[in-house]
Length: 289
Ligand SMILES: [Fe+2]
Ligand SMILES: [Fe+2]
Image (cartoon, rainbow, N blue to C red; front, top):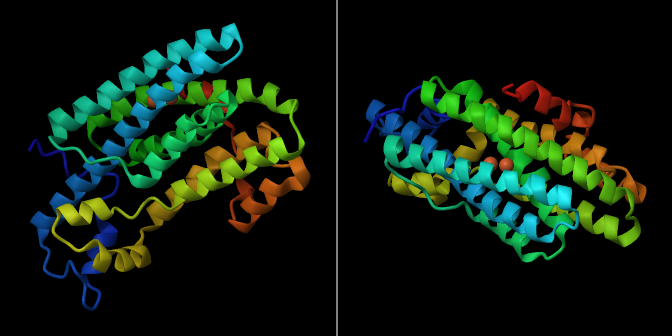
């Protein structure tokens, strides 16, 4: 294995070290070798989810080319298909050549992409992929970009982020017009879709597959892991909403139908992100020129 482990990972296993000290801990016997292995597996797990998300994006944007009713949107979406193919390739190569391992697609991410692809309404493909999955991807790439010291990973993430910000900005632009025309139950359906997708993505970070591969029972480990989730990780979960909430506001989904979605985001404690930079501003910031 080409060791890019320590310093390359999304975090440096700090919270797992803390679990080691707990009474009855399943990782009480771990030493440096195991922690390094954990950091590598953690990175491989995350990069694999990036790969699978990009594969989903490739299929969804090809679908958008077929289904979106406007020719200009078809032109744009076709350029996005090419971007997504490049993203699939770069993460596949990073996994195969640098980490030499892959993880399967996380079940929550898979279920969300299946939902998006099985819906024939073009705007649901947009909403699910361009706003929710790509919003999550931007948060995830940004988080890894800030914490990794591995130069190749940092550079490739920077390129991919620049594309993703453009994709989300395009999604917001196209949907804004369409959603200005809908109201009533149709609008509620979109609000519910956003909320369910957000919850699904929030709950996906328990790394069961990593524990299994390291020979630790996920059933025994998860309760410790949930208690010790690092601040960084909790911050990331909130960051996900920092991308989604302002974009929903811009689409009119936050306040439509008596503010149903506003109430749900308030209950989740993330409504304070509503005026964070939306992705059209971020797109300028992340642009590579
Ligand atoms: Fe992508
Ligand atoms: Fe994208």
